[in-house]
Picture 1 (cartoon, helix red, strand yellow):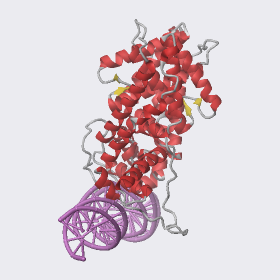
Picture 2 (cartoon, chains in turn purple, green, red, cyan):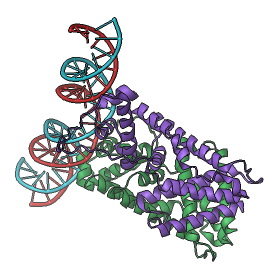
Picture 3 (cartoon, rainbow over the protein chains, first blue to last red):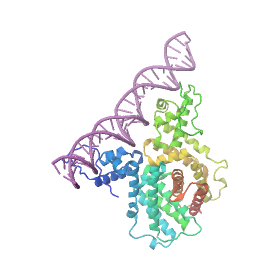
Picture 4 (cartoon, rainbow over the protein chains, first blue to last red):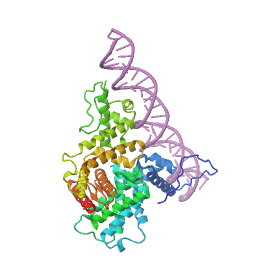
Length: 219
Length: 219
DNA sequence: CCCCGCTGTCACCAATCGGTGAGTAGCCGG
DNA sequence: CCGGCTACTCACCGATTGGTGACAGCGGGG
């Protein structure tokens, strides 16, 4: 995840550097996409709009219409870009090779997902967006995110089969739901259902409880 | 003349029904509050503003400033009003009197909360708002909601003590987080982490998995 | 060379937003 | 009957939004 220093609309030409903008469509397109991502990650979807993105990218909004066909196309591009999320989040030591039981696997997966989301503001904002809005625009983005997550889970799971007698799909969905809501609530208000989620110690307690829950179902 | 034609595009349901408005400040205040609640419940927080509330209430926005001191005060009034949520959601057959174990209690609580949230659009919108916004305005509303939930849980719990050796506060917070996210995701996109949440059958599966999870930790 | 196309900029549009000052309309006590 | 209080409406403000048409400047191919 690149966090590029974005030039805010402060004093233009204050220094001796007029920053001659080169005519490079590719670079501009990338700048727009990067601006959109960082804007969404930092400000959330509420103030995410054509004007704001153009302002942050340092170019005219007309270019967003031209290159991406408007906000919808830009959002779609963000979704496509989200595919790289998976690549960056797969630990080197492969998936569940060394994990013997399904419980081992799911426990590790849960903790990894918790940590990944905790450190990924963009993903969090998208998640919040999905929950708060139901437009076509967001539905596509949601689908891309969902697909990325599913792929990630699959890669991590390897070829380990879930135990019989338990609806693993439903249980896992609930565990994931818990993780997502925990992270969202923690990032937004610092707590969830009375449980403080501010300090690393708080998160350790939450992680421990999460482990207990996963172990409770999968042994 | 007074406006009797409230221009809203749908919703024949109970909410703001200002018929034959007389000069009655109390009634107007109530109409505004009702309009605000129904607007928030139906449209979400994204289009929740002074103009929209006034439009739905069928009065001038100036009155909102006068009677509630602006949107903040109105939101606060919604929060206060949320206290009634608890009263309406406590089943007649009292709390955990007939429940022998903590597991019995938590299982029942989880299912009741799941159902309550599923059928309460206003609460869902507030929940989504909390997660997506971090302004003072929403933080107060969040606190009111949180307090209502805590009170509800306490009333339901009765005097049953949680088992030792497990961080019940953390575990319960996670279970609640799962329920909340499940309901939010279901209402918004009809699914969560690949699990479909549309038909009653879908929800039954989710509820069953939820029961397994609660039983897994609390026995 | 000139001209055309691509890149980028700017000005302008209607709509809506939150917010306010001023004015109208009905009721009630004297 | 009237003065004043209160409930209520209206007109307007500046700012910002998404969106579009016109134009400037550079560069490469004829």
